[in-house]
Structures are given as C-alpha cells and as structure tokens.
Length: 372
Picture 1: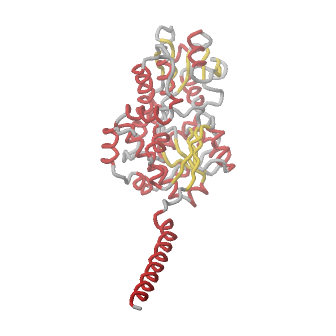
Picture 2 (picture 1 turned 90 degrees about the vertical axis):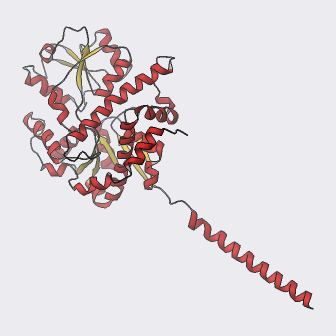
Picture 3 (picture 1 turned 45 degrees about the vertical axis):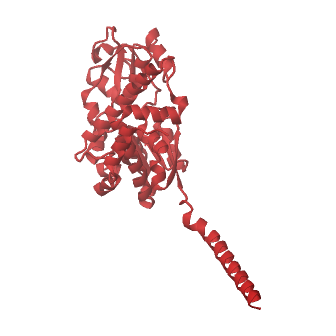
C-alpha cells in the first residue's frame, strides 16, 4: 500500500511539474521575445546610395536604429521635390533633401514641414579641367555648364553667383543636363560642356574617374546649411520621439564615420557590395577612390557642425536657414518668406537628446573596426 501511495505521489508531482513547464513555455515568448521594431521609411534625394551617405547607411549596418527600436528603410527617390511629394502623400515618413527645396516649398506652396537634422552645407563648386582657360567665374560667360538635371537644388546658387559677376544667368550661359557618373565625366572630357556644377562628393568621384579639376566657388556657400532631414509638421507633432531616435542613430553614425573613414568603407563594401567603385582591379585604388569621395562629404558635415553655436551633431539653426531664405528673397526665388523659426525644429533640448549617447563607445567601436 505504501508503495502504491508513493507511486501516486510521484505521478501527481510529475503532472504538476509538467503543468508548470507548459505554463513557462507559454509565458516565455512574451517575456523574452524581442520588441517588435517599428517601421520607418526615409526618402533620399538621390538615385544612388553609396559611401557618401554614412549617416544613413551606417545606422543600418551597425544596428544603431534597431537599438532604438526601429526598422528603417532608406529609399533613393531622385530629387528633393520628388521626396517632398512622397512625404506629402504618405509614401515616406522622413525626407533627406536640399535646404533650398525646403525653403521654396515652405515659402511658395506653404507645405508644412521642418528640418530636424542638418548633414551638410552648400558644398557645390563649378569644376573645370585643370588646363582649362576658365580661371574664375567671370570666364564662364558664354560657356556651357553641365548640371545633374535642370531641377538641381544648387542651380539657384549658381545663377546668383553668375548674376553677381555680371553674367546673365538665363542668357549668358547654357545649362545642360548631363546626369551623374560616367555621363558627366564624358561630357566634360569630350568638350560637350566647359564646366560641371556639382556637389563636393560628386566632384571627388569625377576625380576618381581620372579628371584633373580646378574648382570655382563662392566662399559664402559653406556658411549655408544644405542637405537636411525633414519631416511634415504632423509627424513632428505626433512622433517627435521617432525623429529623435532616427537622428540619434544618424548622429552616432556621423561620429563613427568621422573617427574612422576607412572602417566605413569596409562596412559599406561588406553590406552593399554593389556600391563598390569599378574601373580598376586594384583593391587599394578602389579603396582610395571611396575614401576620397567620403572625405569630401565628411568635410561638408564638419562645416555643418561649425556653423552652429553648440557644435552638436545634426543641429539645425534658424539663423542658418534664415540666411538662405534671405538669399532666396534677395535673388527673387521666393516672393514671400516665413519666420526663420518655422523652417526648423528650434527646441535645443531636442538636439541635446539626439546627442545623448556614449560618444566614447562609438569612437572605440570605430577605431576597433571589428567587422563581422
């Protein structure tokens, strides 16, 4: 009898233990399951997402945005106006556009959006071949200038620069759309155009392709903010925490890139091998080309920090965007203006939160460059 009772007790204990195990199995997924990532789409005013976008590419590869709780999709859309259209239509949540497009859309069409992260300045230049007879801007009169397309965000600056030097921007020069990459290089090399008007990293890419260039630019340009992350006012009102997290991931990536550009190259090539430059079988040459392109962008990012008083990563400045808006008003590109503070997020606490991360850890990670 005692043996039978002992067996009953053992059976009961086994059932109880099994029930507890089943309960734990049922509860465990809810307790250990990774938090579901919220999806965010960023539309970028470009046709090619290469190494010159470290604040957008590195957060994906290094997990900075996932750490913030977001699954971010970065989409090359074309030009700034197309990105704005996508934002207005709800196709993307955030835009990476030229500041000129932000100002014109705000002033002319009253599109309610603001910049919440500045990632560069107006770093464009008019590039001519080093042996060209064109020595300064005045020599461009009657010449053909190649541009990315006729809706390029820098054309207003080019026209103002020409006008300030007694060249009719509409009749004194001819602007020709030459696209990007090989087509632009060939246009200058063949004499189809006398000069190219492109941003800094593009000119670096042209030099990688074998062009020896001399640059002509208005020194005032680098005091103006340009490539910026923007969002609709409704997104800012409802999801400021999302924008803060995205900007913080981008800020971490910016610091990482500034610390070790060659590690950015390695990460870029590993995660997006199709973006690796072509034209040489020598890996060292290809690496040099990409670093040259990236450094041009890093210089622009550095200038963007220097025009802001606190030097915080990504900080936007109402004064900076205001200077650009004043320029547009003076040149007749806009007929009316909005208060400067309406162009950007002006709460400095936002940028302090964006920059609230372990800077030393990011620097150490970049230096170690442990690419898995």
